[in-house]
Amino acid sequence: MTKRRKKKKLKLNAGIRRFLRKTLLTIVAVMVPVMISGYIALRLLLKGPSQTFSELVVSTFWETRRGKAIVNLFYTDEDRDAILYKNTVNYDIPVTNTDNTEFVIPEDEKDKIEIIDIAGGTFKGKMMIVRDPSRIQLGVNVLMNDPSKGYSVEDYVQTSGAIAGINAGGFEDPNGQGDGSIPYKIVIKDEKLVAGKMSDYQTLIGFNKENHLIVGDMTGEQALEWGLTDAVTFGPVLVYDSHPVAVAGNGGGLNPRTVIGQTPDGSVLLLVIDGRQPNCIGASYEDCIRIMMEYGAVAAANLDGGSSSVMYYDGRIINSVVSMNGDRAVPTAWLVK
Picture (cartoon, rainbow, N blue to C red):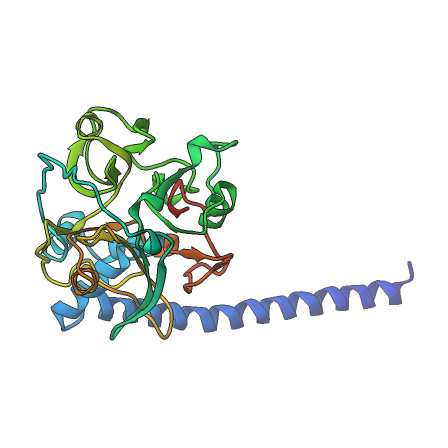
């Protein structure tokens, strides 16, 4: 290689290094102020002059994976837990007996499904009213071909030959890395405990042999003794024995929600609320209670929400899901056959 070519190569390399240094300095110069501004903005949101607003933000953030990390950045565990406790649904509803009366559904109403648009100041969503409660069944991933993976609500609907479905119970989420494959605590399917332990004491949401929606705190053993045929673990309970459950503070913040309820004539209410979107932030527990009471629920409970909230009907998702990837994997789903 000639000296001239060597000099050109050295100059070229030097030019590349100068360009990279300038680019790096520019990125640092831009990112540092952005990060500082972001920190200040988050601090104002989470610890600003309005305690009520800050607590609403904390409650809302806490129901998201990334939000938990942000909240923990600004609050000690003790202070965070105090805020969450004063802004949620605090209850103790042990189930001591279950209703075993039979619903009489007129023959011409058994196929009736009604879809209603739901809207509020900070949310929108869909209500599905299923007239015949015997059409509600539980889809469970541990009963499918590959229990090591989660399935979307669409998968459950199509695999079981159902017409509709919503997400149901929660899933194990260690360190925020859960993939929707492992159900959270107790799951009962066809009168058998398929997840959890007999001794686990949890808030259960399910149906008994007479198709009554049963919601409340019980062990897996009690649930089977009282005749629950299908049930999942989640909560909180929102309506019990026709009465709304008391809500403290902001009621868990504003987030996408999935709720199941039942009216005196047996009709099942399936509610999915959208959220975490520019035109739709989400609903509080109190919002969901108000909707359930408006439609005459005698029992209702909150199911898994957030990115899991989805309603599938007649071949398509009919709500606006949070995830850009669409219907996420979940371990259980309430299906309409």
